[in-house]
Length: 299
Image (cartoon, rainbow, N blue to C red):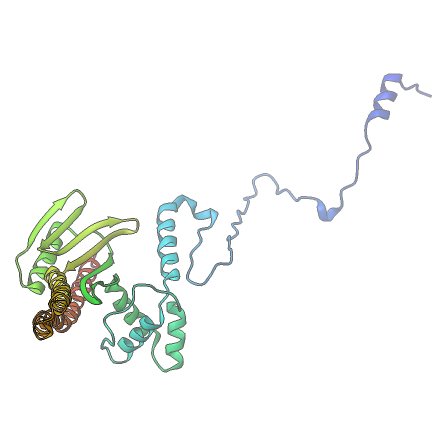
C-alpha cells in the first residue's frame, strides 16, 4: 500500500467540497466561434397620456428628446377655464368668436377632455384642437387697468414659436402701422425689438420659454378726464357748502348745478368712450397676436 504524504493529506482536508450546480442554474456558454445574439429590452415606464419620457437607451440624443419632453409636458399642463372652453366650442362649431375678453387665468379641463366632450356632442376632435390653437394664438390678456371703474389700460402677452428674422420683423411693423393707422417708431436693443407710438408699445422679448410678444397701451386722456371730473365734484361740494353757510342757498344750488354738471359730463364722456376704446384695442391686439404666431410658425 502506497503511503500518502502528510502535506497532501492536510491539503485535501482543507479543500472545500465542490457543490453540484443544478442544470437549470447552469449558464450555457456558446462554443467558440458561435455568434452571440445581443438582446435589447425596451425600457418603459408608465406616464400620463401625452407625456414623453426618454429611456436610458436614448440618452445619447438627450437634447432633442429633452426638448420634446418639455414641449409635451407644457401642452399636457395647459388647462382651459369655463369661459375658454365655451369660446373653443363656439369657434369649433360656428367659426366665430363668442367673447373676446376672456380672463387671463386658466384652470379646468385639458384639451383631451374638451375633445372627448366635443366628440360626444358630435364635434370632431380635430376642429376642437384647431379652435384651441386659435385661442392660444391670441395670448393671454392681463387684467384691465381701471380708473373709477372704467378701463384705461389694455395689455396682452402671447408666446411666439421663435424669434423673428429682420425681414419678418419688418413685416410685423407693417402690420402694426396698418392696424393702428400710425407710423410709430421701431427700436432694437440687444435681444429685444420694440415698436411704439405714444403710450402704445409692442415688443418682442425673450422669456424662459423662448420668445414672447407683449402689447400694451394706456389711455392717459381718460385718466385725466376722470381726475378733472373728481376735482369738479369736490369743488361743487366745497363751494356749495360755503355759500350755503353764508346764508345764500339759491347761489349754493347754482354752484352745485354748474360744477356738478361739468363733473357728470366728464364722467359721462368717459363712460361712453372708454369701454368702446378698450374693446377696439383688444380686437386689434388679438388680430396682431394671431398674425405674429401664424407668421413665425412657418419654418
